[in-house]
Image (cartoon, rainbow, N blue to C red):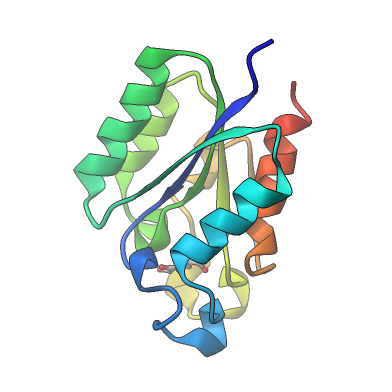
Length: 145
Ligand code: DQA
């Protein structure tokens, strides 16, 4: 039996986790977060991808869509969440389900973070639970199997 495949994808500035505003985003690096996810769900095959570039994120989504067999994407798009119509259109163009996640509770923060242009094309949104937001995103996808 093939194991479930999930893509965990992070956008701009999330490569800086650990150094970046730890009081907001915590002290773990992205590698440590990704390792924790893989350890928490040993039966899942994960692909981890991060880019500072919008286009690279779109291309990764198209790649998993065309390849087939991906149960879903856990996506922290960083600031692109708030303005990238290109990313939104890419998510709507694929069948692979996408869960929007955020480390911080964006609704408690600056007004410009309160709106996501992605939420309406994602299957759900998880925000404010730190690293646990990613784990909850994975669980949400597994619950759909
Ligand atoms: C974030 C929230 C965004 O507003 C911000 O631009 C980020 C990280 C989060 O995980 O809390 O880069 O997506």
